Length: 398
Image (cartoon, rainbow, N blue to C red):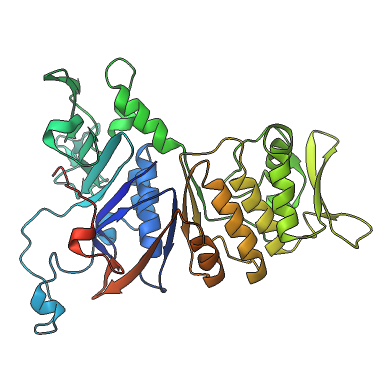
């Protein structure tokens, strides 16, 4: 379970250290930085998938994701005595992301390239500068034991192209020529040389994000789909019928029926096998003489079924992130959704980003709910009520 998340120099987030619990609710007004915090978490997830550089490119490049304000907002700027303006930069410009779990912590630092090298072409007598001159470079990565970074607790250290791992009282070099666009998770990680790296990589890869369920008329979920055992729902929900049938066969069918009855009293679900190995959803509702197919369901009903399949997965992730799950749902469905989320948080850590009052109120009824209310002050995202001494202890390696 994640215990602390730290982000620095990312969009509206200058410096932010967040304590986390089993059930985390991120809320706040529009523009307070909820989406930026969610994107930062996704970038962290991309480190273990080998896609952090591509993810930054899709966001417009590293330079466009940097914190847009001054390096330091002084007391006089906060009091309005002087205008907010650029100051002399004292540190290098880096995007920093990190977290600590129950056993290990991890941090990554990305910066603009000094040089991305040159290449040679036949017929040219001199080297040609690389066309990838805007690609961000991974400057530093660290993996340590304990709740925060200390040099004495460092287990794996990547500084530039070199990766080394602690071996008793000395260091063992694992790689000396690591490409500056590859994470250490892409290059090292074995039970013999660095089991901590292997464990951390698999931990991050088990994070699950749901923020783009398709429910439009042409969505694949509205048509019968080829069915195989599906313990993990696809991120766009295309294999919903197979995921629901998997819950019925090897998951918790009673919880599935209870979740449907909680939102739609008297309703029940059936998955009909079709020729060719395809599955079709049949949704029975009280008073109707025939079941409704997925193509006939409203956007809200279909999205609720998608959330049910995601939250009742027979293979819980280490972290499940739901970004605005209330989209397309009637407010009367939100208490039922909240009860389902609370139930799922007993089996995995859950992160919910929302600004729906009924969902927020229902989630806060759970004693384990860690409600984080974001605000923006002088363009900088912060946590309402968090003072300097309230922050979890955190140190960046660089």
